[in-house]
Structures are given as structure tokens and as C-alpha cells.
Length: 349
Image (cartoon, rainbow, N blue to C red; front, top):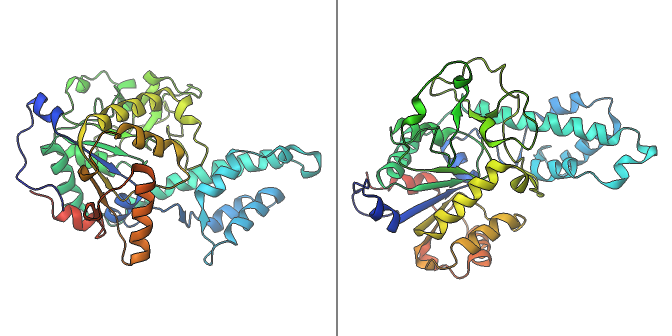
């Protein structure tokens, strides 16, 4: 069940800090609210990708092999990106020609296709009522939101509550992209709650000319929903994100992500209640498992809630096993398998 009782006025900082509710969202959260959002195994304009690498024998072969694993030719983007990102020693052999360069090109195109899918989802159906209800609950209860999602749907909904802003709400001071064109003072307003994006965000755009790893003060928020989506020629074309690969060295390399992860650890370690929504807790993500197992070590497991979508016992058992393997024994009654939309609709208004 969602937390009960009417939202309290939480401007009292000590009270809010002592009973902090941290909500963690994964891909299932976004997918429930935005049905057009991509999954890790999905169609990322795969036919178009095939055309782009036509004539590149190594990249074409790798893409065809990946697509052959799925009956509809879908791509497991985590598996393919990991193969392209972490090149093998034999990719540089003389008898494979320009394999390494071909794979770098395919990785760039796949990353662009992934980001395009996220942007296209904004033009489709969105469960606005539920998204706004969730944002209001987070604002009323001064929740800290931790997410592994790159999209900015929740960012927009929190912004519209009037209690969160992109300047101070990400856990670091993030200027607007238009501040590079105009001198503004919008950043003076504080943010009531935090949205910590552990894998980066599609609207975190570095200023033009900054190389990786990106300096913290070079990152701007470039949104289409608060008037900052102006001419972007003064920004780097790609956002600051950790692509969905198994080897996440960028978590340590990028200063902004080191800061955000540190803040997430502190928020989790001081939480009174932690709720996971639509997160699968994959066994392959060692960094995430380490974060949660260490940060919530002292939190009673009766204060941990898991919200997921599962219609059969096999799916429910798999979810229970995944969470218990990482966090220890969580009581059966703390698992809710009706999905994110049902849980949000039952939140107190």
C-alpha cells in the first residue's frame, strides 16, 4: 500500500530530515507513465541502423548477429552497446580491417537512436494525471527521488509543482543553457526536493568545447518545457549520460556523477522509508547493488517497498529473489505487483 495519511506541511526541515522518504524509479516507472518510452530490448529504428552500416562488414555482421537473437529483430541495447564500447583485442587485428572504427561508428549511431526514441516518446501518450499526482506527492512530502532513467518527464512534472527547479534540484548547481546567452537570476530560488539522476540526463548538455570528463561547471540544463530550449549551437551535441552498458566506468570518471552518487548515498543512508518503483534490480549492475546494500544497511526491511508489474507467480518470485539477494529478507507484504500506475493512483491526495 502507498503511504497513508494526508500530506503534512514539510517546510520544517528537522522533521522532514528525520522522516525522509526516498523513492527510486527505474525503466518500468517511465514505461508505465509513457508507453512509448523504450525498453532495453526494443526496436531502435533497427532497419535504419542496418542501412547506415551497410558497406561496413564488421559492424553489419555484429548488428545482424544481435538482431538474430530476437524473433522480431529487436536489439538488446545493453548487450550490444557493451560489446561496442568495450572493444576486444582482436578488433584491432590486421585481418579484420577497420573493425574498431566501424564499431565506434555503430556505437555512436546506436546511442543517437536511443536518445531519439526518448525524445519521440514525448510526442506520444503520457499518463499526465498520474505523473502530476506522483510529482505532487513527492513535493508535499519532500521526498528525494533517485532515478536511473535518462528522460526528463519527471523533471517537468516536478518543475510544474513550483517546489523544484533545474538550477538546484539535481544535487548540484546546474545553470540553464540560456544563461550562456542571457544573464538571468532564476537560479536564486531554492528547490524543496531533490531529483538525483544516477546515470545522467538527456537535458544535461555541456557547453561547446568541453571534452570528457566534463567539468561540473560546464553542464547546463537544456529543457523544452521551461523556456530554455533555445538555439543549442553553443552546446555539445550529446548529453551527459552513462549509456546502458554493463561496464560503467563513467560513474567514476565523470565528476558530476561522482557528486550525484555521493548525494544519493547520503539520502538513502538517512532515509526512514525507501520505495522502489519499476526497477528490476539486475544482477549485472554491481555498482547499483553495492550502493543500495551499503546505504540502506541499517534500514528495517519493513520500511522498504517494492512496486513492480507482474501478473504470474514466476515473475513475482523473480522480483522477490532479485531484491532479497541484494538487500536481505524483505517481507512478502512489502512487494506490490499491480504496477506503477495502480500504486500512484492510490497515493493520498
